[in-house]
Length: 511
Ligand code: MSP
Image (tube, rainbow, N blue to C red):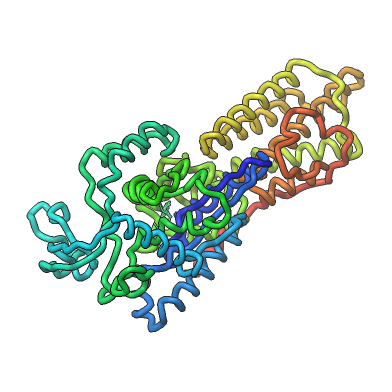
């Protein structure tokens, strides 16, 4: 039985259009899912949409549609993004689906019956505009309420609470004893720091007088459950009947690590007697001009257009190469164009065409068998061993940018190897030893590119497949032939291959 691998992304808020931040997370998870499939694991890849809540209700009202109509429309846009980016998810969950509602209500009923959800009355400062209670920490340096809160009044409200605080000692111990629970590791310290302060119990409801667009509490029809209790449960509700729990990896952004994913979610599961997920993989933020890409900044939707103009695979490569998982990265047209031209066009695209040209010109289009084995060949093979080791180690830690960096070191070494061997000179020589060197050179470049093409399948699935086909190789569905084997010799290659066409800049707007 193949080992299973259950991977998820955050479910996106359904109150706006998809943007760069959403796109990146789905691409990252997709690359890990494809890599796991090629590694022989039985993958279940879940993504979806977070459809309830105040903002959705308000936006729908403003637009004069029902919340359901609004989320149905938004869901179309998000699913289009997934298909434009070539995301290979196995399931898409929407929190308005009955299968999700059923599980959320089961959780609520059990925790209520076990005394872990209780009703309480809270009095305090309440922001009408933000629809939330405030604490003194929210005041500005002069002790006043910042403008964003609008009118702030003293309010008393009844709600339901989850006994989160009860699980604090368990959670601290769990995080300490599972050093791979939160990756990258430096994020773990942030969570432990947060857990130094005593936690409050978690308010999980809103009265229907304030919010109707949510899942009704099964034990009190006057309330709906609110935000995280609903949203987090998607990871479980989507596979409740599939025997796939615990999740292997939840891919999330740093803004929703603590407290939602690192605190609420493991404690909710613990309270239910369900195992915690195995890992939280926490990525940073894409910024544009150093500002977080977001709907409200309005700076992020257009960046997706690069997937349309330059192809989804080039965009996927850029996202994976430019952002070190866990750190922030700045998106710009210049850095995108730089990588497109240098890494993709010049280093990789040209290398493929150099091989096809040389094999066409000197060997009637058929990759020769290697006949000489000297220092340059030994060096290429040893550099592949390094790249392969880096690739495997980086993927084990989900560090895709490091894997790609190692691959490009190898691609550049293949280019340098061609310069060293200078096959155009060898082809002119009448020495048999030179002919042997020429054949070896072509065989080694061909084999190097086969391995590069295989390694790139999770990141650039279509481009890597095109590359492999053009050098006469089958497209593997697994890493079974991922070792140096000179499998290329004897195969017929294509005449030429344009993997990364030169894209003209859009015409300047008329004066
Ligand atoms: N609905 C919640 C998540 C619930 S998960 C049970 C949510 N939605 S979101 O639409 O605001 O964000 C979805 C994901 O996109 C989050 O992981 C978030 O970190 C990520 N990103 C949103 N903007 C981002 C960037 N600018 N850069 C990278 N990812 C960011 O939070």
